[in-house]
Amino acid sequence: MKYLLLFLIIPSLYAQVEIEQRLDIIKGFPCMKCHGSFVNKKSHFPLNTPHENIKLNHYKEINNCYFCHDRDNRNQLKLINGKKIAFNQGYKVCIQCHGEKNRDWKLGIHGKQVGSWSGKKYRYSCISCHEPHKPQFSKWIADPLPKYPWIDSARKGGH
Amino acid sequence: MEAGKRMEKVLEKSLNQKVKRRSFLKVFAAAAATSVVPVKEATAFSFSKYFQKHYKEMTEADKKKVFARITKEAKEKYNTSINISDPQAIPGVKYAYCLNLKACNGSRMCVTACAEENNIDPDIGSYIKVLEMPIGTSNTERGDLFYDEHNLPKDGKYYLPTQCNQCDNAPCTKVCPVEATWKEKDGLVVIDYDWCIGCRYCQAACPYEARHFNFKEPKIDKSKLNTQQSYLSNRVRSKGVMEKCTFCLHRSREGQYPACLEACPTGARKFGNILDPKSEVAQIFKHKRVFVLKEELNTMPQFFYYFD
Image 1 (cartoon, chains in turn brown, red):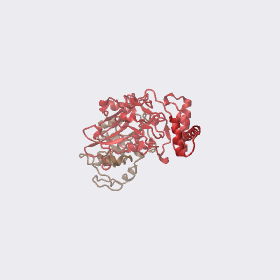
Image 2: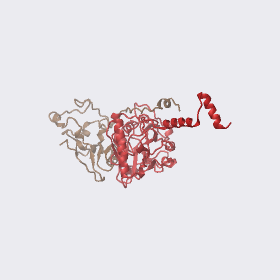
Image 3: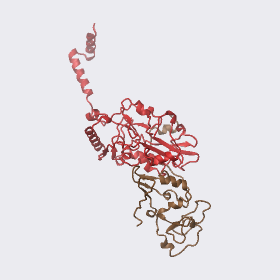
Image 4: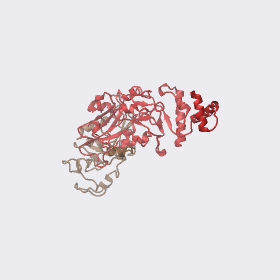
């Protein structure tokens, strides 16, 4: 089931937009395979393997994993109003706070969207770029400049 | 002594023999004829290319012959089969490109993707130039092309990718003496590479440095050659002609996004039909404040920038 790509037709758009499915990328799903047999009560860091790399630095008021994760069923997330969310609709957790970005994302303005400008598009989800636990971007290294023949004289400030 | 007799006397002295005017002229004419015969070299003379019509005057039969010639030349030069397409402008479409300057981090992945997609000679590099600009100005004279590639984006700077803006009031199409470059119905400014005479007037006229000249025969790596080519966009050019960004005409007229958009890691680039109110570019016009470069020159570019 998780290998099938779901087609999500958003009513405001005429074209079909396919949203990146988290379950196609995530490893170790379903979570309850491990968390069903044992319930790890601690919510402070560092976590056990395989989550030892996770550091929570999203917003200073959020210091508890169970703000987004469902304590009783680790296969799903939860909203502030208590509603449960599947991992494939994980963006619904983000849009609780990021409303303006949600409007832009739904229009295809925010984030990356590939495919066809006149037809079907493939839209990347929030977490394909933004790591939900630590969303601050690290510094990037750019591709090198093309090797223009005039580059050496231009760098020195020559004509 | 009259001139003819004087000539004869001079020649007699230098050649040490009696020269007859008729025999001298015979030898001279033969020497002149042999020096004019074309020599076989890398850019061989081709009658069909010399007598080729302007793209806008070609019939379907003419186009077939021309594409066959180009395919044959590519096979001889690169030993690869290429595919020359000729997509026409889609009616009811006018392309616009929007770029989110808040999202661009100066990665130059668009620059690299453009070079690979369009079979560009390494000396020209790419159709896209990314400038590191100080925050607070859109004056490209203050941009730095040679910025440090590490720790991007830098504080106090923003990154401005520039390429052909497909201007509605393009100065380049006005100055071309042979009309080798013109604006198509869907907004793209294109070049017929076989009609261009290489005078570079268009390069002088363009305020955005978007037009590039082939000073030498382009040298494309055979393994990196993009075989999906089209007559007006990414086919391999020859020495002495101009080239420029065409918004990947061979892709966009088939409904695909340009290569630079697909390569951008942050999703800063948006492309589409400005006449369609539901397209991303029309929505950007609705919700964001867009600006263009060098607006005071009245070129009416179709490449719009905005800060999110």
